[in-house]
Length: 291
Image 1 (cartoon, rainbow, N blue to C red):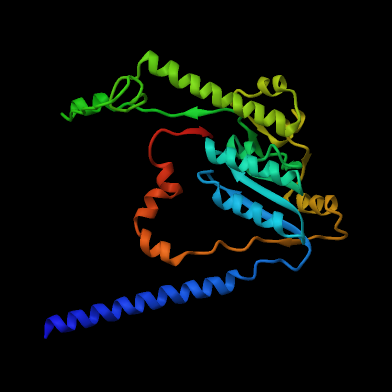
Image 2 (cartoon, rainbow, N blue to C red):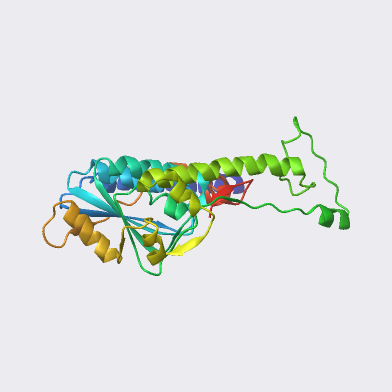
C-alpha cells in the first residue's frame, strides 16, 4: 500500500512539473513572438558591473541593428572592466554596429579598462566630468600558498607535460621563467588594447601608448587626451543620438526585449549552470583582466 502511494505521489509531482515547464515554454514563446518595435526612437543598452560575459550585450546590439525603427543606440557603460575575451567580443560587435547605425556611449560613474575598451569604437563618447575612465592596461593576479600548505602539513603533487603547464600555480614557487613567459602574454594583450583604442578613436598608436600605463583619468582629463568627445549626461547622449539619427524633437527611448528563458535548459542544467555561467568562470582559473 505504501509503495503504491509513493508511486502515485511521484507520478503526480512529475506530471505537474512537466505541465509547468511546458506552460512556461508556451508563454515565453507567445510573449517573445512580439519582436518588432513599432515606435521610432533611440535604443538603450546598459553594461553594468564586471564584464564577465559578452552574450547578452551582443544579443541586444544585434536585436537593435535589425529594427528599422531603431535609428540609433545609446550604450550606457558603468563598469570597472572585466575579462579580456568578452571585452574584445563586445568591442567587435560595437564596431560592426557603428558601421551601420549611430551608437553613442554614455559613461556613468566608472568606465575604465574593459569598460573603456568596449566604448572606443562607438560613434561618439559622452562622459561626466567626474567619470573615472581610461585605465588602459592588463592585469594578471597570482598568489602563492605554498608556505601555508607546508605549515598545516598538506602536500601537493602535480603531473604535467611541460615545465610551463602549471605556471602561476599557487602551490609552487613562481620562477623567473614563469614570470617572463606570462609577462610576454600580458605585454601582447596590452598591445592589442592599445591598437584597439587607437583604431576605435582614430588616434596615432604612439599617442595612445603614452597614456596606456594603467592610469585612470577623469572624464574631463580624458577629453583632453581625445579619449572622450563631449562632457554630458545620459540625457545629453540620448538627445545627441536622436539628432544624429535625424529624429526631430525628443527621441523615444526604446528598451531591448528581456532575454527569453529556456525552462527546459533550467530544468536540465540545475546547479551545473551556476558553475558554467559567468560567475563560475570568474571564480575559476587564471584570468587576464582589463580591470
